[in-house]
Length: 453
Ligand code: MV4
View 1 (cartoon, rainbow, N blue to C red):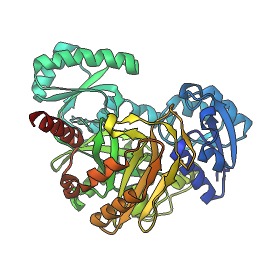
View 2 (view 1 turned 90 degrees about the vertical axis):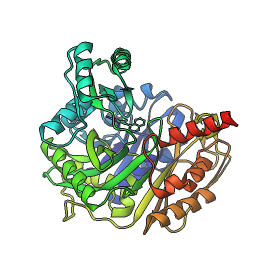
View 3 (view 1 turned 180 degrees about the horizontal axis):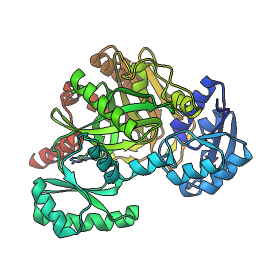
View 4 (view 1 turned 180 degrees about the vertical axis):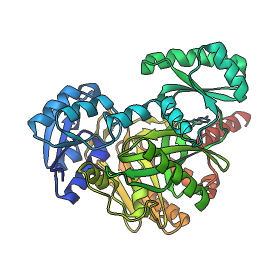
């Protein structure tokens, strides 16, 4: 078993990793930036070392700095959390050559799935469903011809993009030519790779994903789906599991696809296969090769500890579970509470937390790194807490989440707590019939009704 884990992250996920280490009886060593010296994970880790200034480029993304910190602290492994270096194949290779175990997938897995059109091609080659589309486009004329063949509207995506970055919808040939050139320019600048691919645009889709765990012995475990369709500008806001629109047949289908993908690429560690669902049709979209923000809802309904499993897998252990299709009971929902002002277009609101009351009671889990008098630094993302509810039914999970939102009080900074209260009360959320563009649509509708009055 690994003995000394370097935590190469911050905030709630750093704390989550520290807790998994403690449960396993192994030592956690956190690398932190100057701006995070008073944070809870730095306080609670077994050992700590500063890795640089506040700016992420100089600390959490600074590979030489992290390598020397890992060397000084004599660690045998590193957990990257999500974001930062978690999906960087170069970092994995450097760790390997320094004899430090990267707690995550192989560099090859990261490289393959990091290129979204290569991922798409791999999946399609194995006769698994992808959105109708094409890559390997020669020039704009070829692309336009292919788009016409697929039928408008189409979506133009950057091969090196993902997570909503570098994509545009074209509804006709004129729009296509404009967006193609703009997309190419953007992709060149943002990802240093101008390569694009096109797909049929799926209207009002849902974002459904399957959590997987794969060990080094070739065992692949697939979990029930998470529904992450409640988003705003590609930021997930509420996730739930199981999905209100997925029945046992669709679930089994998604799980079989996810398992096959992991098998053909020889995947290891935790990962997530993203699907786009239009009606009852599901298409592979992307694979996320990391532990995700929303992993706790899967833990709530399956009793797995996914971070602990990642560490056990990286230690070369088998997953001690008998079924490849993981069973579950009940329903779980997560609200990502941000220090942002919904009244000011979700403008980040860093600063000192003057008063804090955290919720609790039956069916509530709170993953957070904040505490009273903590100062939220302005340099990082604005996630301050994940409220996770569990219920035997969706209705019970919603009611408990509403209780938790009522109980939670944060003074000193603006938060999204009241915004969530409104969303949870909304009949469309309660009916489960929301989709990925829904929040933007009701925001647009409420603006327009304002104009008409
Ligand atoms: C799409 C799509 C519709 N049709 N592809 C965005 C993130 C990445 N994982 C994939 N995304 C999408 N790809 C096709 N062919 C819709 C999305 C999408 C989305 C689009 C607009 C506004 C919000 C969205 C949220 C999730 C997914």
